[in-house]
Length: 353
Image 1 (cartoon, rainbow, N blue to C red):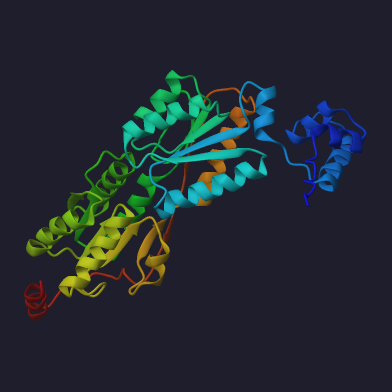
Image 2: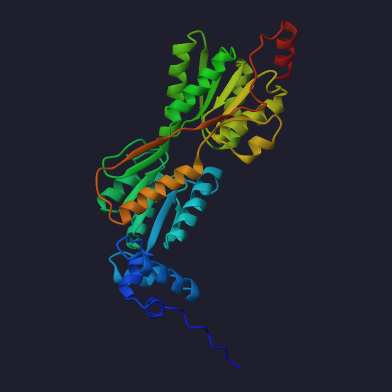
């Protein structure tokens, strides 16, 4: 026995139920403010009663581009970009857009190909979190193709696209101030040896602020990659020869690497060395000791970037806008004031290493 599939309500069904034209329904659904409030109420009531949902592909046939947006991020496995993607997906759905999400896997060549794919799909606009910066391959390809878009994270400002990022320099300077206040005079920065505007800004700002407020603070910089096996050896070699009183990791995997190497060597945190990580994660809050972290406003970044993109998609003109959001510093168990080690304690630490 065959079952009758319920017919999906169309925009014309909504128009008949509301007693208005299909054009009026379309305006209400797209948020155009020129429709009379009484008609807006009628359309919304009809939409709810009929269970109407806008079809992005059908809308694309009536417009030059589909009601589909693109999102390209460097890594969908990271908590930071995973949350960005989840938030943008929700915002797109609320705005009656579909979202095509892709990961560049931290490779500029792949990022450029994904931009071209979004162009072929005729997405209405693309939100790009670049591998490198606004000067990278992806953003430059978007410009060459004349695509509508916005940039989020690892960016400062651009002459074509709106940019939304965090104040990396301000947050890192705040960490330098905090470590100086707690009398730390030997600090190790752990950064990425790959090209990363964010990491460069964090390292530069910390070093400069430390030089200004604590000229006698020694700042070492250890550049590693994201491969834990090879990076462990680089950090181990450093700790064989040096004993900083604090470590400031400029990216999340570096924080995990530092804490695991401390435990492997029997170096107690924070008794022997304090630890601060840039970017937060659930494991940093529940591990022992819980890790002091620079917390990025991920949801706000996603909200602002999506709003910028949608404004451009809906036709807003004008000069590009750049916005840097402040981070918060969450103080936890891994950071204490520096205490000079007694000679016998230094000997024990060296033997443990």
